Length: 206
Image (cartoon, rainbow, N blue to C red):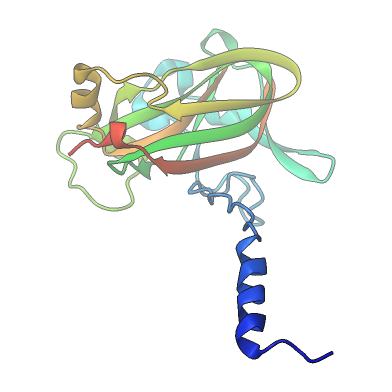
């Protein structure tokens, strides 16, 4: 049998390729060291020392947060910090207008409270690209996720996470940076934190 002319061969190949649906590409996390696997500093990219704030409830906070090993993984361990609990935050992430932010994490213990915290520059601070938390002032909180679990549990938070009122939009316009904020009332563990951003016209803050 004679082979098909090259023109028809090309048409058949193109038709076959059109049936191939590419696999979805997962958005890459914009959070530094969310799996706590940095070999020289497993807590790199995270804030656990709040002595700069001068709040007596959290002067010793860093002594209640450590790295533990569970199986082959490094995880964050929260000890009992007393009535004030224990907290930690990611290093500040710039808030970009036109995007919503999604955080996923694995957590157990608690009760816990998780949200996106929004910050503006503290008075007298000269803006720059890599702020420390002490150079910022919290002015916004996303919808909060709370819970407690004896086993590992997947939790998610989102900014904004709710329909934005005109007042909420005005408040968000002043936010320059976000952190993932985790608070633990009782001992617990944290692992595998990711943050992704997705285009969202409702977050147009210009």
